[in-house]
Image (cartoon, rainbow, N blue to C red; front, side, top):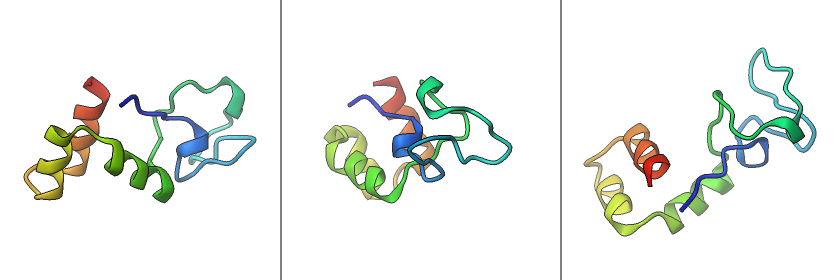
Length: 75
């Protein structure tokens, strides 16, 4: 699974611009955002589509959300 870390899937995003704090980025020019956080809808998609060997330790609280996301980025 490749993460889509754009305004489209961000908790702060909108269709036209980045809404992260102190950001003036235009949505179309962003490939990945440093302030990105998964929206509720995208979080659900991530959990559903993550590989089992990353998803199961996260669901059982053996790894943190940050570690879960790091492992997905490395995949």
